[in-house]
Figure 1 (cartoon, helix red, strand yellow):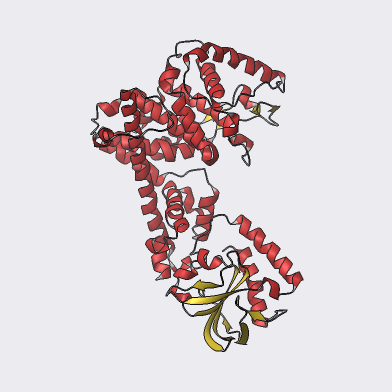
Figure 2 (cartoon, rainbow, N blue to C red):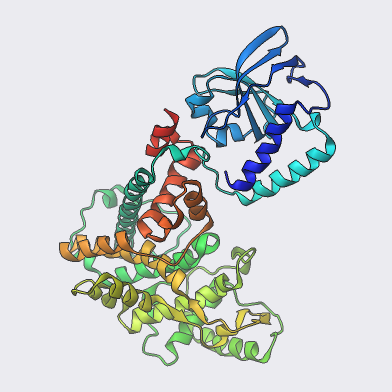
Length: 493
């Protein structure tokens, strides 16, 4: 828990120590609790708040430990139910009971009375503590059960485990990318257009052994990169619809207009109209918007008769709580530029060829980033949405941070599987080496929380640890698999 949270809980401990309750403590079934000895406050790392207390519940006297939490659910989210240090707890106190259960369970399966003290303390103290705790709780989105006691594991042990998890996550991404490549090739053979409402890949697909010649389909690789990059540009809130858009407006369709003038504008016209982001019957907010809508509408009307795929609606896109630079309109404009590079500048071959040479990792990083960074230009450099101009110029549609996300999550795992398919071991090793040593500029709240909780400071900047932290939280912490986690095994056993 962060420093503020420790102060909040300290308030509650002081109330217990001094027995500053305004009425007598009772269990949920109204048994009276008499405090004979509050116990000794635990000053050590981990374990219950008070040791060797003596209390009487009804007619039975108990000798053991006392644990005090802000919320009833903290017993679980802090991992007390997994921790042997809490097996001697005889009473659990919570400021707020957010589950209405009158008890908790220890690691050895013993039931312990849990009581609510919100109504047993002075109202002024109660209001101040509650406001502070709720404020702190809102700021802690991702909670880890080992929050206060993982310092028992050394920093090197944590990093070693995160390294394993990061590399495992990388390999899983590569395997997933390979499966999608096979799907694209197979559906192309069956002449099935995507996205369809539902289809199941048959037994023939699952039993099929794809040859390296089949997997060398250039257009399939281009479609694959197109989908993956668009998904990455959608962030968490719009990644699904961005991917579906890429599957609807396939690269083979866009290529059919390659030799026509204003090719990049044509792609923009198609994608913005199919996406449903073009406003319906709304008066343009300014002259630039009127001109832009006129140009892409003319181009779309020329192309529309040839498009028979799915179209979407503006209501399917999310803008709420997004920074303007991350609006799907701006990211879509950046995606069009990447598409243009794929179709006119041989982007995929340029990426692959970078791993063929004897280039050092720092230069390789710079070269790869430069292939993905997209500077702001044209209409979308001055607008976030259609109904008003931006307050300041948008310098980048895809900046260094987002380029890093695409490199780590798309380019590197895809390149690794590419070199594996075509038996280019040296190049494949170069890809993995870059991933293991990549220092990325991007960050997110989940990684920040895990990094802070594990007291690892700047380790997250290295992609293998960054990915390891995501893997740790999503597959262990959030699924209550603490006893399957190497860190949890050390702490809770």
